[in-house]
Length: 261
Image (tube, rainbow, N blue to C red):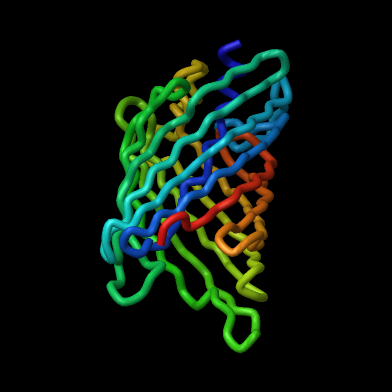
């Protein structure tokens, strides 16, 4: 039973929240659901193997961002997860994270650094620190009714307390906006274990990500304004290749708004 639950936990959530600085006293809110499923995983040698059951994960997540000033934005995230693999089920709160974001470029938004504290809850024995830097290049807003484009680059370093290996996570993302109401994006995310690369996952309920893994993940998404203040986003994800990680496919639906500006 513990081994099955460990297989359910082999795909962490996306590492990247936002590269955007909020205006002073601006409050941003986002909430949604993620679903993914898999019946295969890459082993420690990168060979694709069948799992003993078909795993599925359903998560509800919320994130909040608040502009302390022109130079600082604070944020927090949490999620509630329901996991299944055959007849085995498990549910509860995932990790909580709290952090701060600042400007790398004082005159342009989208180029930022961030640091976040990751706190364990019911279903994770991990806590640690996340350090990141992000850059956005181009203008996503439309100009003269023509489609505008930009791309983003970013990287996070995870420093875990305890036995979990340090992890480097990076991404590149391309955005296109045919109008202010509609936006499309595609992104590649990579994760790489920096140490303990020969360590297998620890098959216990409370040791999420307590192993070294590599992963290349594809995300494709679309967002649409549904009212003056609210935007709806849908995404599809697929793990293209990896080591010591599940071959997972998933979808997500979220809604976001600036509640106070």
